[in-house]
Length: 252
Image (tube, rainbow, N blue to C red; front, side, top):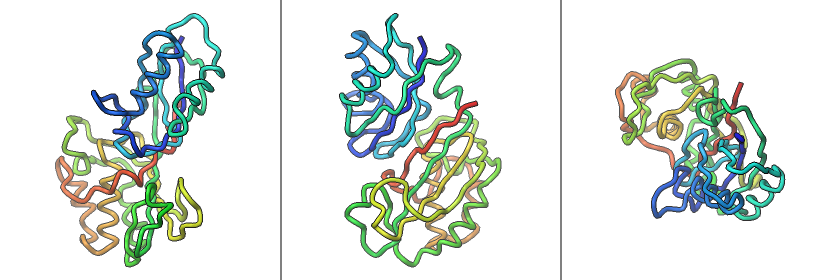
């Protein structure tokens, strides 16, 4: 039977989502745990590949359960106990055979957390990128509005990607107060939320890096438009991975 599974994970200590030989990855440990419970191999398909150090509140994967029997809640609890606290299984549900975590997704929401301060906060530093107080947040919010809509984002694609269809639609790009995960008392926390029909390799982090550099005065206000008109790969500053969190994967 086909399953849709939703998991949250703290990305510190993982070499990203995708299975890699000799590396501890989110997909790898999930497949190992499912194989123990099912007593046979289980291959999973994620909605997307998060980089090393990136977090997720609601990553989705699908898989074929290889047994005739299934106690959904028992499998969910067992897998969470096995992989916690870094990974927690939020939900497992039976779905139509046509469902595929990546191919069936219609959009995704990401958030990037910024900490504005002269020094990093010891309890927020694993989940937020600390930038100096001189950053112009109003300018950052204005720049984010420029990427809304459908554009060719080749100029924001990471160098290791072979994707040729680089047009994506950003439904909304906003700067909001407050972080996503971590302590609430750190102060100076803001988040950039991006909702789009898809994201290229490192696109979210590259957009944040460019916007912050403009807001800090390191790049001219025209830099974002110039990158939207440029070919791959992205040649600017990439925001650190630990500030990025996958918030949600949306389906019909």
